Length: 503
Image 1 (cartoon, rainbow, N blue to C red):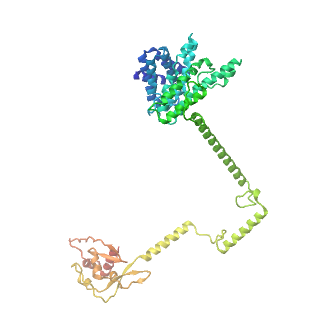
Image 2 (spheres, rainbow, N blue to C red; image 1 turned 135 degrees about the vertical axis):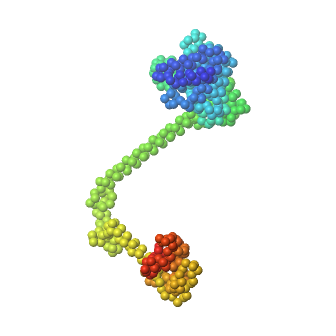
């Protein structure tokens, strides 16, 4: 059955145009009457299971036609019960389907929109069934009196008593039980107006029924006759052990309201403590919604007025005369005294600027140089400062004995030299050998050409790489002495080695 209803569900999905949709919804719901009793119950169960499963995939363009299909299913469910003569077992099976799926109290898989929609259409379709019976049957009064209204409303009573969803009991109370009271009251008023000779068109112009207009008392008489049974069932469900405290309170409130509207002194039971609520819960919800709408409208109006005031103020500021004020001000509020005070302040400010030598209007001769000139001047300053910061090693005479050099590659003449080298600073002149770390003898300096040493310049060490010795044509190593003799100048060789070492 679920497979069949999935196919029928998407068949209805593809139905287009309002008339086609209405006809197809009627035909699909009418299939209940073509089934046997057990198959009819399974057909209705499969429909509601499919609706709850696929409901969240229905878009806003198709939701109305599926709500119409649900309305038609409720009507033909009542029709199937009526054709069976309101058999207790069959009525119980159909109501069990409604208790388990569309009016289930706590299952989160059941959409609340389906619960509320079933409550909205339940009484409407029950009255529609009574209207059809009246129009088709000869003994309509007996058949309408046989409708078990209290038993048909039992799923909603149990829903109110056991649900944990806070806002739904108030909606069910308004759409089901208050709807019954309103229909009966409007039918009685319409019946009295008809007895006074007024036309039905005039009386029924203010009726706000969903599906049926111009209801007479005979069409809702079965609801009025079933009020005592509804009262008894409300007390019975409210007194059950599994009923929640909040649900029991609401059921007793509905019972109390029915007793006040349709009093029966012989059978009514007076509650020990009267339940008082300022107004019906549904009306409270509507009142909150109206209050929110009014608050939103007032806020929108206030924002509009603020924007309007701001626009007017901006317009006045722009239109203020520039000759009167050098600042933004309203011309209408300016006076001669304000003008004199403003001129005096301007004179004081300019005097202060002159004394501080920060007058705004300066001559062209005192204008600062351009960005290009500033950049060029900065580059020259950096270049001169770098040249001044370069240290130099210069030889000085010292009386201290030269430290002996251990490597054998250093010549005797070089090792015997007692002169020392110190750092020359162009800004401060030659630094005297006060600190021993800044003094290097000639033997140590000559050793830089062949071995790795650390020289200290301003107490910062720098590693010097070992040069690769060049070979002559006779495959002999060129020593510093040979290189100097080959070049013909030993002094120039020393200067080259010293310059290479410093680099």
